[in-house]
Length: 129
Image 1 (tube, rainbow, N blue to C red):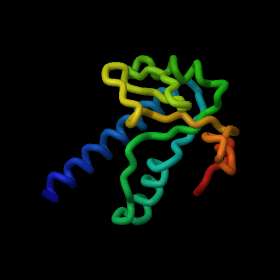
Image 2: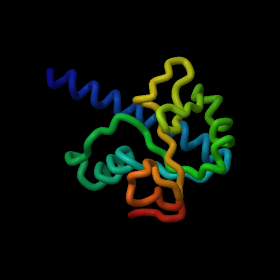
Image 3: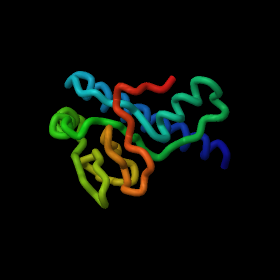
Image 4: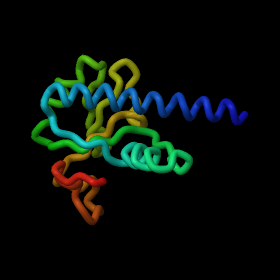
């Protein structure tokens, strides 16, 4: 049982990392500024310092500027990703098998994700360690 659990964990982490790499490469090629944020950013940060303390996340969160949304949609189209706005969230999902739970969630710099949030998503110029 544990071997299967570890294999599933590794496969999910590999898929997340590969997805993030492909999208980040496409955005970089298009000259679009972005930051990986949320659980995947924490996982990468913690894994670099203490691999045994790293915890998995279910998706990829990217902070971007809203003005770049049309360019983002165009930049990832060749990757088989489509833009969706679902339940108040902006995301990129696999066009062949859309799944909003594992999509790439877009968070807009300078805006709150939810009205109840205390702070807006930081400007992309603000880098943390």
